[in-house]
Image 1: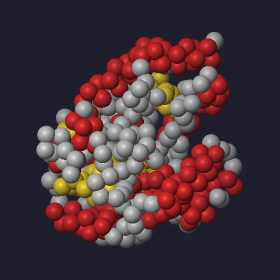
Image 2: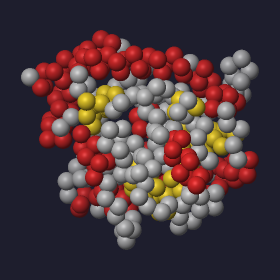
Image 3: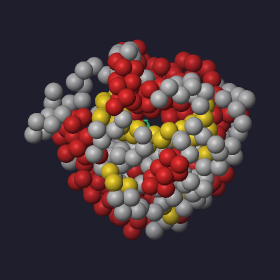
Length: 359
Ligand SMILES: Cc1ncc(COP(=O)(O)O)c(C=O)c1O
């Protein structure tokens, strides 16, 4: 087992979050499916913000449950207890872009209403939320170590809990998954090529979303798999360096703030930041994005899109819960890079490209 000063990755995750149990998973979404299955939920209503990753929606569907899209707060882009206007069996709040969701209020609400809570900390490793580590909230929490994430192992994730029975149930279910192999690599390459083309236009015409059911059939297996044992080289070292990485990200974000002076989400104390979310007028968002790509800023992305078109296509017959705020924010956002290797000069170069666009 690889270690830093004798600690394995799972031991470090437990130390850093205060959790009793941490399990490594094929990816973050595998942890979400594992949690829903270990809890024994079937046909349950699982609330998620409408502006989260499609793979969360897929994990819920794969577990045999019903995703319910929820709206978010206009200033933070995050779920609040006021925006949960539905009876639910489970809830998966997300620390969007690594910014802390209001977990104390959400946890109290979930506890009072008997709602199973999965904290989606895929993008928030290293953050603190209401003074406690991201990943320490909820009945279960997940991290992602996938490609482009704050800790980038190309693939991988973790699921954490304090509940011994849930930990045992998840361990058993995870052990029965197929191991990642060449078939998964091939499927991933196909899916990413198709999805990135489709998601740019799926809100323009409902017929485009008509492809999603076939694509979910073809690529749904990408939600849940197992990595070969000991396939997390360097993870303990990256976990140890997480606070330095958080500070580097925040310093660069402050640089973006200063150089751009444009709208972004507030960064509460304890935040980390996966990528810098820039909010612009929806009428010019795509033109600005193309301008950035032409200027060589290929990491700039239209992310996260609203999940409404995909949900409607994948869940025919489910009631549609309107999410106007999440849809609007999704049409305004461009994410700018903060990953390791990005330095102040690159932020300046991107800021110049953006200023050129506006002038
Ligand atoms: C907000 C959010 N939640 C969950 C996940 C799932 O992580 P993974 O890709 O490791 O399954 C992702 C990443 O894609 C994400 O962005």
